Image: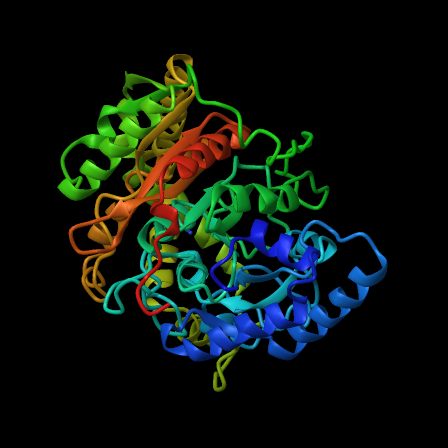
Length: 483
Ligand code: GLN
């Protein structure tokens, strides 16, 4: 049962082949059995079974809701009422949220069951899940490898089939990059498509939540639930939500697929390049036309992001001061000493690095040279996409330059860690939707991700292309040995 997609599980529940209690118990057993992956921070076994029982009862006398009885895991960045919401940090390790994030409310209203909260890089800052206060997550494909980050727990949980699907968030690649490294499907929607209310803020102009699943069809089901206007998030967009499942089967004849030359240059591993080339051939066979395009400023996306994201983070994280909620140092002399000790002890190294960079680039005298310049560059990067979408309908490239690297391989070199997101960050800076889908295995037997980037609010098209690709290939069906 655990190898089924949500679409298949829905059918099994509907046909009475399995109950939600049995299904939930099966996933809880797997979570328990594979605790060594460290994919979960909190497991809500009892509450999950109670929700599943209620769901089974409900199914007896009411039409099932869209995700009735389906167990889902949530990244520990989403506030969940009555549960610890740690964001992977010591700072929030004791924080029990008094309310649900809008995304969580939507899942509950759709009938989904919460299995638990998944491990993540501290405050979503990282590409390997190694900055988590709770320790790194292992990649199910190779236990010595990272699962990617920051949604590493969610990606590993889905890849190891500890949950049929999970939520993630993506500020610079944190859904797509771990999806690629763990061989699953991940979608970052257009900025503003999904409410950020109740999602712990990292860089507010970039953060977006999205689904992490086995297939594009499942991602469409989940996006139907997650997307929509929320008056509680002033950046959420008031635009009707289409039924993302309705266009999955549209043909790709005449689809213009843009290949940005900057995504195929130095730094791209040969085995990844080969897999992406093969994917292009598959899409051609499905009727797509290939167009060569250029995103000339995308090579500057990483430095641009590492000015803007830390600037926003330094502001967002000022709220963690030991006064309002979360961690407070035990011993201190006066208020300033309390702030200093609380923040020194509560935050990890990477978070501190970002706060310092952000405070520096926003300071008087440096603002114009760094922050303002980065904002101008962000505009140029967005303009590149605007031009490109005059020539093509979707952009295709690799999600990451290499397959999953080993634990510890990049922890001493932040810049090499940051460069892992070179292909994902541009879409965040431009606010565009992006998706990663499995495209085969590398020479080391670790998964390769194919990235699709769409124009604003064109999630339906991305899902359509991904679904057609998955109908023609089996990469998304491959599972790590032992799971
Ligand atoms: N790896 C990037 C960072 O460390 C992106 C993280 C994310 O998308 N949350 O900031």
